[in-house]
Amino acid sequence: MTFLKDINDASKLINETFYWAFVSPFKGRGIRVRASISEMVKAGYNSVPIVAVISFFIGVILALQSAYQLKRVGALIYVANLVGVSITRELGPIITAIIVSGRSGSAYAAEIGSMKAAEEIDALKTMGINPVRFLVVPKLMALMIMLPVLTIIADVVGIFGGFLLSTTVLEIHPYSYFQQTVNALLVKDIITGLVKAWAFGVIITIVGAYQGFKVEGGAEEVGRRTTASVVASIFLVIVFDLFFTALFYYFT
Amino acid sequence: MENAIEVRNLITHYGDREILKNLSFSIPKGKTTVILGGSGCGKSTLLKHLIGLLKPTSGSILMNGKDIAILDEAELDEVRKKTGVLFQGAALLNSMSIAENVALPVAEHTKLNESTIQIMVRMKLDLVGLSGFENYYPSQLSGGMKKRAGLARAIALDPELLFFDEPSAGLDPVTAAGLDELILKLRNVFKMTIVVVTHELPSVFMIADYVIMLDIGEVIFSGTIDELKASDNPRIRMFLERRPEKEAFSPDDYFRIIAGD
Image 1 (cartoon, rainbow over the protein chains, first blue to last red):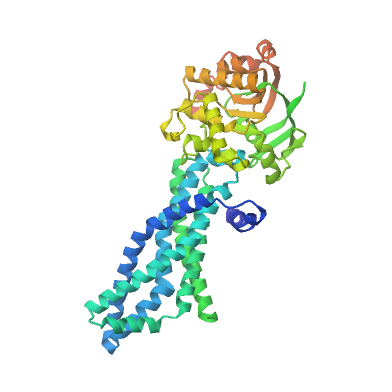
Image 2 (image 1 turned 90 degrees about the horizontal axis):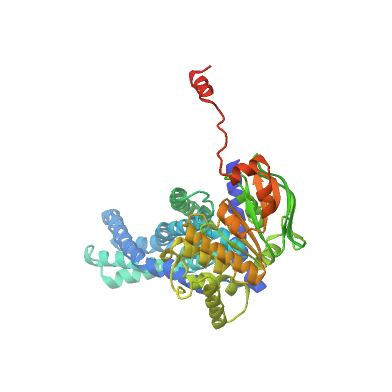
């Protein structure tokens, strides 16, 4: 019973969020641009360093791990293919999404949750300000734009990590590594990765906001909901990743 | 006497538990009405219904002839623009400065330009005695100042109707009395209809024109403050004279319960 109620509440939130984000701007009730930009700085710009460092390491690890196998068949140059394709199609978006769920998804749940506990959400309602429009839509806009952008950064830095390791430790010629990567990558690899990133942005926002609005009690519950939001958004990100990967496998 | 709010046969439940049991009363226009009652009598729940945060199981709440129990969110927002609410913890948005908090409803609901809004904010803060605190954040203010700032925000759009949830809760007597003065001023100068939910007796005697008393989800009294003082209803007398509820068990009964017979 509670499960059905959760589904009902979540779909209500999704419905309302998409209404205020995509329908109401055409009815003369625009989104809060300034708040959206400030959310973009918080969720996007501020996570550039961590995303860059982690995806650099992932690129290095990927190159090393694939060299371990490819060396035995004498196809070391295919490290470039493996690194390029797996980062753009899969690891770039998912690593970015996991970092952002940990940083921003949890922050959204904590922010909205503590506002709920301090009656700030009720205060917004009594001022005739819709809390979803006021709080959730700027976050949605921010993540819908910034998650693909961060993914592009992760792609570039990750490939660079693989490149750096291959050209030094594996002693592959830089030009041939570069050529191999360019030949291996298709535009659709990058595009499908960015489509995933966009969807992950929506998931992380909705899960964070949903858990935040669910807070009824005090500080303890805010903590519990924050944890739940990270677990749930990583889980859902992977479920949707599976879904999109299967979809792209058959239809592109 | 004209009424600002009329509540008819209001019934509400939390789960299966009935919280408000068929309430009917009216709140006069241009006066200060106090909703009085002990803890757990349903007065906070009633307030949440009056400001449209909760929907009743049945019954109607008429505000200027409109039943807010059946309005949808968009229509409700129109009503909310004409009402202000001061929450128990002031409920200022912690991420914004005091000036931004007070400016928020004005910026959201009017098309006034930035400098006009600034002037309005300064006037409201001046009215509640907080001029000079524009750029402070809620976390930098004391409890009493937060409530004043919350009040400035509640009256930002010059509402006709103003609700207070436990205005003196958590304040020392001097600060609480200051807030009561402010409530009196708002009624006298701006002719607002004011509804205060409280259980603080000194505050009630200072500000109330009209009193509605709740007990276990029912209205046991509604009338003027003098009528309240003259009432001989035992529940009201207990409340006014600060007498505790009678012990349910005598020591002998207790012993019998513990001993198991």
